[in-house]
Length: 201
View 1: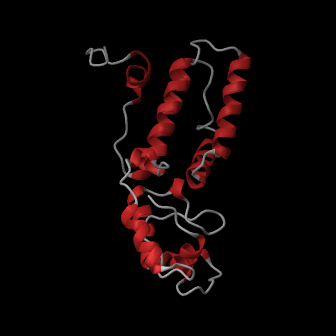
View 2: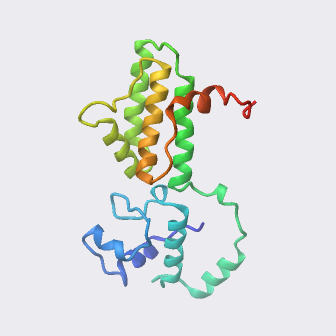
View 3: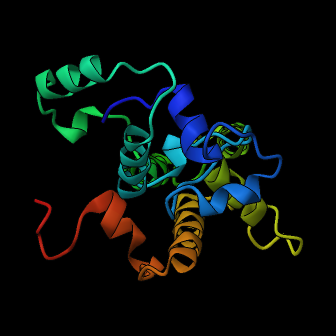
């Protein structure tokens, strides 16, 4: 996918170059599903491929104040088609890869971790919830972990507890997205040992 030039974003988001003060006013001018970052610009890592393509299509259709139409048409026809796997991830690809990493961490976690190991993992999860590239997702995860009752605090006293906790965290996201929940009693077969029916052998 082509990079969106700043002037194209401004034209797309703000109409004919007029700045709007409120991010909420962008909702009617950007494609559905495009998430804005904290500066009001489209967040690629927070947006699905389909919504990003709709945004880039709209940006290309908007006249750019500095674009030369002859150069633009020549460039667009000479660019080779690329495999989308070589493009920056959208929110869905990032999420799938992240859940694979997080569940793999639980699978590799010690059966009986030392206090030091527990503290390291707690620190990792705290930093992860602050540094995750999709800021909306990071906020959701941090809010879920810090739920006032304390029931969602990381459970790190054993591999079994940690694996079940991570599965519950994943299911909380699945519920929010309207996806099917995973039966957490099978987390270890799914992420550590492989299924008993031998399909992973």
